[in-house]
Image 1 (cartoon, one colour):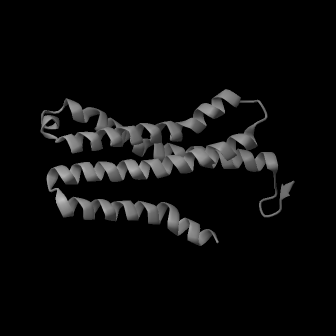
Image 2 (cartoon, one colour):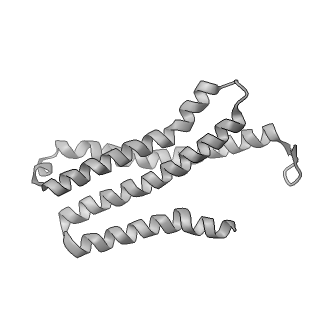
Image 3 (cartoon, rainbow, N blue to C red):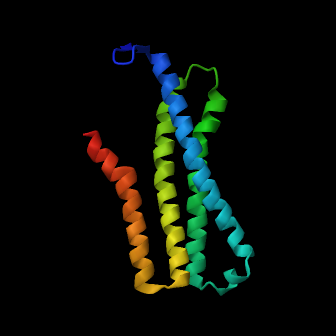
Length: 152
């Protein structure tokens, strides 16, 4: 099957789609690596002992979300390495797309949880809730709702 708009075969399309996806994952991966690194360093700071039990549980949830996001965003790279030259590029692109979307959703949740952790520590209460709600809605809107609405 040939794509008339691009005049490319299915194999060429799969190659292009994979290259584009891997480039996008480089950008997203860098962001989650920075967040994960920040979160990994927190318990080793003097102020970490000042966190309450709820904040510590939030921290644990946030670091788990960041780890899951890292796994999902790096999953396509590992998949590609393991099926390299096995004639599975179309399957790889489909699976990598699912992992990337799930990874982005998880990154959004991890960032939102990190914002909640910091804002709760700094000011707490309503301010933390409002700021976190704004950030969460921003991620959901820009990363999912807007693109999906424009897709139709």
